[in-house]
Picture 1 (cartoon, rainbow, N blue to C red):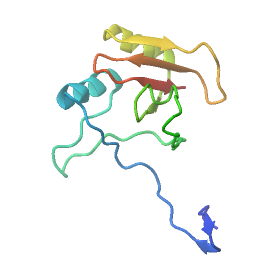
Picture 2: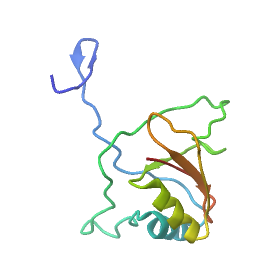
Picture 3: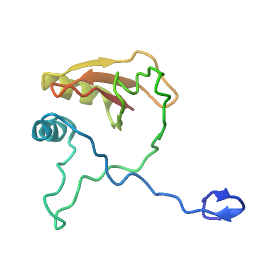
Amino acid sequence: MDGGRRRNDVQMERVTGIGGFFFVAHDPDRLTSWYADMLGVDPPPADYGQQPWRQAAGATVFAAFPAEMASDHLSGGTWGINFRVTDLDAMVTQLRAGGNEVTVDPELYPSGRGGSGCPATGVTLERLQ
């Protein structure tokens, strides 16, 4: 078997990853620039001749939360995103140098260390290493 799941005793197709992450922003150009300048996430391509940002392969948690549940993953909003990084301390230093407040969680989780910050764009990020 190729690792696919079975439902009602029938092999089912599975998505292979996330092909895009879309959201509304009050100042999309500023936010796009922030992600490029602070995190290295390339802007969306202007046409199909350009390549979009490519992420490294790795685990991705895809989780829905009850509407009434407060979660650090949602940062008081309705969505949240965790970015994987190779060197959390270097990323924190880079973000702070860019004028962003970042807090590193002192707890070591099975998935690694984490940190969060509220960049000038108003979006809260979490990073796991």
